[in-house]
Length: 293
Ligand code: UTP
Image (tube, rainbow, N blue to C red; front, top):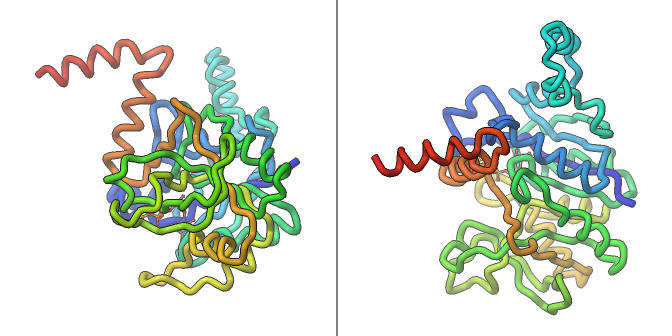
């Protein structure tokens, strides 16, 4: 059983400025909840309850969000808003939260390295704090990834999603070495290839399962042109060394919502708001009116 997850949330989020000037992009709301809450709920629903956030400056609101707030609880009790109490009491989530800081934003690979002591000698999950899997975060793909990791004795399992071929230059793309039932063995990874150079249209989707071996490989990665240590490069090293790297495709109807840029953030917000059980229908009518006008 894998119990540990590292959730990197230390990035600067420059593509979402000015919204992210003094608040983490991972705390931006998508419909009713901040993005990172969907990520936590997905992890817990898949049996991963020990969660380390790799944070940075200006990220304290993430800690506050998952902390208890007796004053708020008292106020809600006093005003009989007990339904809202459920929404803010994360003690019942059955998760333990841990925090550490990445002092300099030296890339995703470097952020994961900050979790080495937390992970110890155990395999662990990485879930990007700015990506939601499945509508309202209700994805079970992580469970399948962990099952494969153990059954196939893999060194790494990556979630991938099909993207349009003309979009490959925005993603890390996998080259399939061997196709199996609902997963494949990865031969190679290519970071942001042009469509004509892309080995497939399967893009890395923000969820990973790793053996602790990854830490040594991250240490061997050279910084890129921006001075960042890329996690993809460390996984590529794994492939080159013949380690078993597998990829699980998101099932039909499930996609990865990456909220790291405005177009994708807007789309995600609208889709989640439309699916809101209480306000969705009225919002659909508003949208129709706005589009008509
Ligand atoms: P991104 O690749 O979107 O980078 O991070 P970013 O720095 O947050 O955003 P931009 O490019 O400036 O707009 C993917 C995930 O990795 C984390 C981010 O917080 C995000 O959840 N990350 C990234 C770190 O924790 N540390 C880093 O140094 C970089």
